[in-house]
Image (cartoon, rainbow, N blue to C red):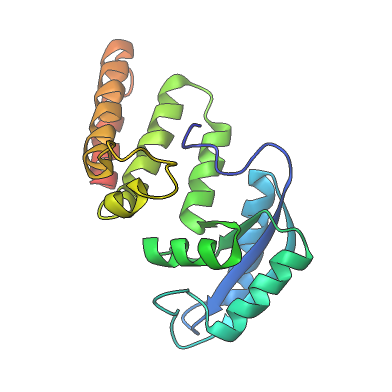
Length: 196
């Protein structure tokens, strides 16, 4: 599995979720998220917005809205939940565990769109590097818990080490690629500044 394939090429049935804190126009934002979802190849089945002062630390939405989301997912064969905000690692894990549906946030969706349109080897490496950097914090600290999950990730894999060192390998590959082609050497510096 490549990291830059978050939305399958088959139309996945998506539920969009947002928390309206009053800091931005949630209706406009979720409409933009719907367009992004279509661009990534998802079929949007529904949208749920909850008005709250701030997102819940554990589940992003309140318990009542969570129950509504779970029921909607079960009744509509939802494949993926796309959240119109950046999720913490624990929020994402908790939502996936409770809904039994894959969950991504707006940032991962945008990175997925970049991946769909990346044609060159360097472009694909840039997207994968960006995704690894974004996921690094989610893997770091979760290594021990993940290594014991149903034998899906062998215990001998040190996810903390993986999260810390795999981006460096891709950054090195990008450096070699840019050096070899000699055309966008300054782009690597921009990428390094953005992702560090």
